[in-house]
Image (tube, rainbow, N blue to C red; front, top):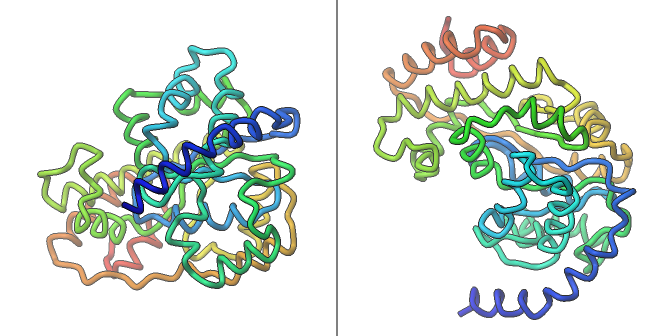
Length: 300
């Protein structure tokens, strides 16, 4: 009943949300950032941190409702795709509900944490839209990633075609990420529903290598950070990447949160699969390869 009520309220408020998005000054919007990667990969934390920034508007999930705009943007078949995507995302980011339906990131589980909600309300009160929007950030990571990979979309080409577009992928230890996705069934979107955990480990590691290659070759368009890099310098770099001000209040609010997670207990077969995956997919990134191996307690 609550989901039905939330959806009904969202539809009743939709004209106001659309009106606000149509009044958006597109000249102020400098970047649009799409999240990449699987679930259980620090994506919700990243979205909630950016929601605390005074110049960033965040759309959470809403893949089914935003998919048409995303396909046009990624395919390059529609001239005004960037503007249409931004306006639709801003409209949808003002309402919605928790879960796949999506909408405002304030509905996400991250904002059930008192510190996060208090930090937001301290600056913005009950407002769900920022006064000055320089960046629109969309967190629908696994759906976007699956679509890009399934359709063989060259993201480097997409970024070159639209220089205001950015891609971000947090870089959690892929072994822990794989086990978490496997246990919760999130890996099925990548065509791995009935595959053994060892294949999921290989895929999640390959996904990191794929993104690291893009970041290495196109640093202006791709940004990723490791858990250990969650600090003030990383936040300053992130703001610069998205062409946002390195707002000191925002940085202080962000640093109240933490990314520390406890590693899983690993079976021998899982460690062997991970060792092989690291050697195969991260050979071009030896520093990160070594760090991930050390975290799992294996030698390459």
